[in-house]
Image: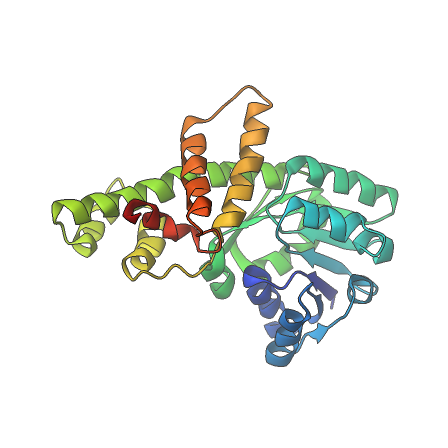
Amino acid sequence: MKKIAWVGVGVMGYSMAGHLLKNGYEVKAYNRTPGKAQKLQDEHGAKACATIAETVAEADVVFSMVGYPKDVEEIYLGEKGIFSNAKKGAITVDMTTSSPALAARLYEEGKKQGIRVMDAPVSGGDMGARNATLSIMAGGDESDFEEIKPLFEIMGKNISLLGPAGFGQHTKMANQVALAGATASMTEAIVYAKNVGLDPVKMLNAIGAGAAGSWQITNMAPRVLKEDFAPGFFIKHYIKDMLIAKGETESRGLPLDVLNTVLSLYNNMVELGFEDDGTQALIKRYKK
């Protein structure tokens, strides 16, 4: 059975690594904040490690799930990072939502060192991570994908290889573009309902079964109505994703109006002090 290393035990990574442990895999875990890896050890039996080097040295598969492209670059390319310490032949899988260009660069750098590299960002938020129902969008070599697909199947339900290195990230960018409109429209539907005197629960039940139905209406709107703004997906991280998507599209001469509008709304949320809320907190902007 493959030995697993997990770098980045945050909101998502904790649950995802936990599923591998529950399925009998040996997992070594590292997090910049040591207490998070220790919690995974205490509650699920991982081995918490003090360094990336210790975490990845014997691993057959190295998963990473961190915050920003700069973090990905640091943990892979840094002197004490994954490429400097993983064994030859290992597969590394970055599940962070990051830059397609960086994913392609890591693939090439890994090849030089005899380390296989895939990008496999996910969609489904904290609920998808907890319930092992994530959508997993992979880029890389087909042979590597088939080798570790059984591990993906422990963490998610909709698993696809979209193309070569970087194409997982490109697909996640398309996901984030679609999410922009869905989140903003769900929010404004609730705002509209409340302002004209509709019962928002009845309204959502009515429209959710029709053409306006969406994952956001089914899963996130109930959180909004309960004023549960805990971050399954941080606003600050979504802004990061939208900026990556904006850069990719504008470099191709394809500015996207809805994406840019929603990005401006979330930048306003940061100005209001809500960057550490979940994305469903957008409704707070309409109460300012």
